[in-house]
Length: 343
Image 1: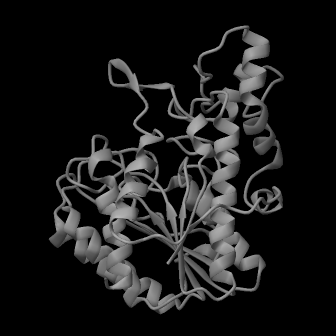
Image 2: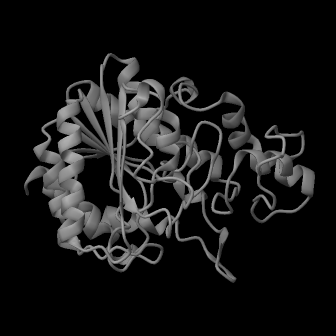
C-alpha cells in the first residue's frame, strides 16, 4: 500500500487546550506521527512518498473560500492586531440570536469560524493544514488512478471541520475534500466510513442533504461524548440525502463485541449502497487507553476493523484522523492497515 506523508506538519505545535479545569499541552501533536512512522518501518511498510503540491480548488469545492482565507491568514492577523505571540484562539463563540457574520477583527473571525478551543493557531498551522490537503489529494489521486488502496498519513485531522467551521483539532476536512474529488473525477457514489471515536460532525454537515456521498459513523454517544450536539441515531439525512447519513452511537466502555455488531451494520449499509470508492476516516481513539475517549478496544481489534473494510472490496482511501494514546498509536494504525491487507 502506498503511503503519502509530509513533514511540514511539525510547525503546528506548542499550543495548549482546556481540559476541564486546567490548561494542558495539546493531545494532537507532532509526536503522533513519529510513533506511526516508527511502527510502519518496523513492520515493513516502506512505500512512503511525499505529497504533490495542489492548489485550493478541491478545498473550495467543500469549504467556503472566505473560511479558507481566514485559516490562511489567522495567525498573521492575530500577531498584527494583538501584538502578542503565543497561540490564537477564540473566547466567544456564535450562539443563537447572534449574527453569524464575521467582523473585520481577528477575534470576530475566530468567534465566527471556530466552534471550540481545540483549534489554536500558531505560526506553522496554515503550512500544516495545506500539507494535510496535499497529502490527502496525492493519496486520493492514486486510488482514482487505479490503486486498490492508499493511506493519507496527514495531520492535523479533519472530520470535525465543516464548510465554514473549524473545531476538534480539525481545520480542513481532508476526508470530505477527498470524497468530493472522487465525485468530481467521475465516481457516481462515494462512501465514507468513520471509525474515529468522536463523531465526524463536519463530515455529516457537509454531505447531509446529498445522496451521492454516504456517511457512516461509529462513535461515542453524543449525550455523553464530544461533540455532544451531533451524532444521534435519528440524524439520517435531509431532503435528497434522507437515508444517506448513518450514525451508530455506542456507550462508554464499549468492548469489541458491541463494536463488532455496529461495524457489521455499517458494512451492510455500505455494501447495499455499492459505492465506487470508499474513504475511511481512520481514527484510533477507540483504543482502551486513549486519554480523550472511553471505548475499550484492544490493539488486536484494529486488525479486525481493517479486515472488515477489506471485505467491502472497494477501492479504499484511508485518511488519518484521531488517536491520542501516542505510545500505542503506531501499533493500532498499522494493525488496521495490516488487517486490510491480510498481513
